[in-house]
Amino acid sequence: MQPEGAIELARSVLRRRIAAREENFLCLAEKGIFGYARSPYLPLLASRHVSFTDLRSWVARDGLESALRRLEEEGVYVTVDEFKGKTPLRRRGVTVILRESMFDNPWLSAGYEVRSGATRSAGTRIRIDFDYLHQRSLYDAFLLDLHGCLTAPIANWFPIYPGAPGINSSLRFDHIGNPVRRWFSQVAEDQVRVNWEKTWGTKAIFAFYRHSGGTLAKPEYTALHEAHRVALWAAEALSDNPNCVIYTFAASAVRVCSAATDLNLDLTGAKFLVTGEPLTPQKKREIESTGATAIPIYGISEAGVIAAGCDHPHEQSDHCHLYKDTMAVIGHRQEVPRFDVRVNAYLFTTLLYESPKLLLNAGMGDFGEVFPGICECRFGESGFDVCLGNIRSYEKLTGEGVTFVDTDFVRILERELPRAFGGRSTDYQLMEEEDEQGFTRLHLLVSPRVGNLNEGAVLEKFMTLLRRSEASPESWAQSGVEMWRQSGMLRIRRDEPVSTPSGKILPFHLRPATLPAATAVE
Image (cartoon, rainbow, N blue to C red):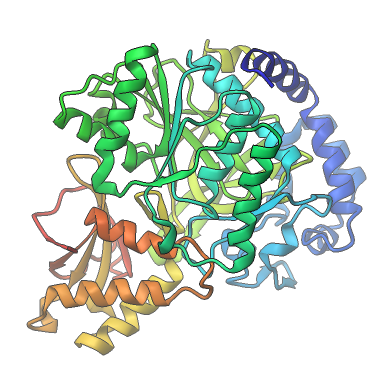
């Protein structure tokens, strides 16, 4: 496919899907939920006596989102802990033990598997269908065209396969006729422990694309301190083109722009597609201080990219238009016990037949705003009139594009560190914040009550315990510990753990204030 043909096809297909989104949802629900005996949603629906006829009438009368809210009020929803099998689903007399695999699309013919970037177990295993990649590539064409870079040179800075973003985006960009020119990887191949099937599977993907005439750039190890290599590529690309595209994590984009500033490089015309962690106001300022543009890309591993930023200014630094033809989102008041707060959690419902997972009011650990998208950009003109903003996670800590889910932290903070260095379970706490450069930092607070400590030994023990907490050696997320080590993201401070307004001392604390200097992992 050529880029010009891709954008024409994208406009046509997306317009049709938006017009038929309610019909598509009902078709998927009828076949994939009510017509699928092993659907994990059936016990919930049956307990509330909700039939497909009921659901269809609710959608016809009040619209899709109203029908989803009615299901949520009836208790038909799944939290992220229930989805991942961490806790049983208990709702109004119904108890169900779930597994992530139960939500797999039963009609998907998997082309390959990727893993999410979380360190819980081995991360979520996601089966990817090549028809799904085709559908997703239409959004890439639409987004690149909207930002004036449909044919601009593209580079990725993502970890190697089986991490999802690098391989998925490479295949999608190649499909629309603008293959990635360079694939920089923060992780070296020898840092990713995968079995022989994944190793040969990777080689097979590259061989298949070479044989079919496609182009896939091979990953080049580029450590975080080598961000200047990406900055120099961008400057060279801009010397021959008005624009270039760099698709990477938000923190990695900040590193590239910091390197560009050090090298006195002007990145005007560079478009940073940033994902994997929040595009905060500070990160956006750091990126755009070089003349570049920061474009938020929001997605979840279970459904791919579901929202992206337009070319109009907005108050929220991460303002995104929801890809409403493939996903519906409603808010759900969710109590987060380990943080002692209630948030407006997102509940996701998939509308795309080719989606890897079938989600019906399923939480994925994120929260934020959902609001009408009154915008005169091409997203708005095309019918993408629902927007998301101020997106954060209540289920995981995120930094350098790597997410660590709280289960292992709780055990390490409350049991392992006190056992190794003394003190009690409430003497250790992680505090997440953003520093003055826009980088996310984690401070390990250790109460002075614990006594004299070798701070370097405490940090090294913590990192070692994170690596050993992996249940499977296949997950690329083990290399995430190495990325944190490279970045000096984790630091230690001798101070009392911070309590919540209700007086609780929890394993995590989020605070925007800047802390004094702390000891960093070398």
